[in-house]
Amino acid sequence: MDIAVIGCGRFGTFIAWYLDHIGHHVTLYGRETSKHMEQLMRERRNEYLTIPGSVVLTTSLSDVEKAEAVVISINAQGLSALMEELRACNMQQKDVVLCMKGIEISTGRRLSQIVEEALPQAKTAVWLGPGHVQDFYRNIPNCMVIDSRDEALKKRLIDAFSSSLIRFYYGEDLIGNEIGAAAKNVIGIAAGMLDGLSLSSLKGALMSRGTREVARLIKAMGGNELSAYGLCHLGDYEATVFSKHSHNRQFGENFVRGELFTALAEGYYTVVALVELGKKYQTELPICNAVYDVLYLKEDAKLTLDKLFTRSMKKEFD
Image (cartoon, rainbow, N blue to C red; front, top):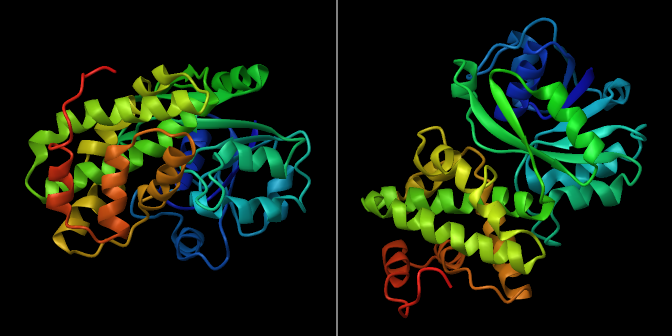
């Protein structure tokens, strides 16, 4: 299959490497102004992996038009702008696969909605789940999920993308998978805050209550609350809540310690959208609200997290 990958960051380069590794013809696109792309064009490597010579590197979006499928892995808040650029390209009848997690702050739209509205003739899917580039590149396998409203597209992608390195499952709830995947980054920031405050033993409670919180929101939005317990959310906790490779966890830890962290942590933006969705759907999101209060209202992290334990007593499963 001819596949174009848009995004030359940590996961975009992995996707290009992986899809080439399992036998596809891959073109990797990055902006000419990107320092990541500049390094790849010069050295064909970054701090995570080496891009083989069989992968075509390009800074021209016109090269994307030649592909059957386009996999996108960029900053979630930049997706709308990219879609405006792609509208000028020949994207009819292409498969568009989003390998990214987030919610648009300004509109509350899920990422698949952004693509479907901008490119109504394209077919859209999401590729979600746990795994870090560093582990995959060392041949450590994991399980992920592909979901789409188009059943034929879902099957086609899973057949084409599956390997001994990644076992794909068929997603059955686009709303739940997208919201769950985006929200797990916020839980990752909360986990990092606990690490930074030497409260790591509370991560078990964070995972349990965080999953219930996200499940409530998914249900309120019309999805299946069980999705929160799947690969998109709970199944991604090890990689997000514990791993040293997790940008969101590390960001949360650095934040409460007053230390700079410059890598992208999508949860920082996603929490704004989740708080608004909680209000819109009248869903209680205490952990998301606590993270928001610390990051944006500059509330004291220790006191804010302590308040979660002084809330009124409730049944564990409401």
